Image 1 (cartoon, one colour):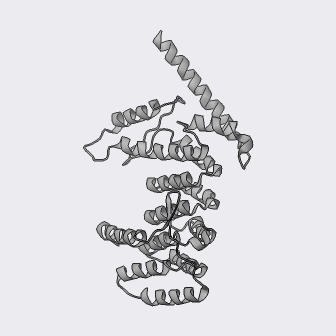
Image 2 (cartoon, helix red, strand yellow; image 1 turned 180 degrees about the vertical axis):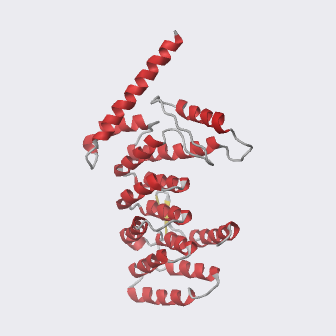
Image 3 (cartoon, rainbow, N blue to C red; image 1 turned 90 degrees about the vertical axis):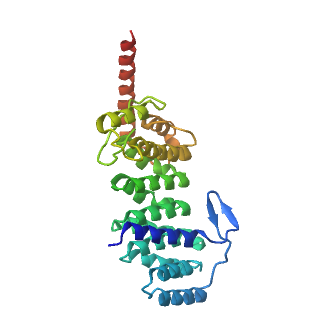
Length: 301
């Protein structure tokens, strides 16, 4: 098994290989190369060179082979890179997911290859999943929202969840609101950190619930002298949710209640039928907030 230090070195090499490319055009937060699309014959030659170079036992040369292949933009190359997602080594799969992002010649094909990889449910490596979600967001492949939504719900890796949310933020597609809401309802103002978990939501606007969640964590678990205090992760996770929702809805919503209110208000504009559960849950949470407000008011008297 690869050590953490060795894997970090490979990741650094991958990042260097795939981001040090000549850039002449910009599309939103995604940089594009203005390289012409290659013909099939040129693609076949590139694939032949790749297959020879990839036989090397030197990992650096294998990574360079993937990088070199990715410089040829053609559907045949995109499909060849897709076969590497089935490779037994996670580093190769991660490099392939990163390289597929650069196949701008057919973004739908590239996105579908990554979507199907996630949909297979066979990928269990955190870095590969993060890279695949990053690429799907940059490719703006919104057809992958159902599969990414399942990752958001079921993945045990917090950073995979955060990368899914970042991808949803780029896509700005209202279809992503349902999986985001499902996650937010389960973790309204908190998330587990090193074995500890807290959750608090009063339905009130502003930062009160976040501050309460941090207070609850400190009281229950303390800091134990660890770097990267739990509240930092709580804020990162919640911030990713809020930023994704803001990008999709066009306005900042502070908690699940506000998101449900927005979805009900814009129900006619949504490209799907709003589940009845959203309205019933909203009613329940609004009632909870009302009772809390009444209790707090009585406490002041």
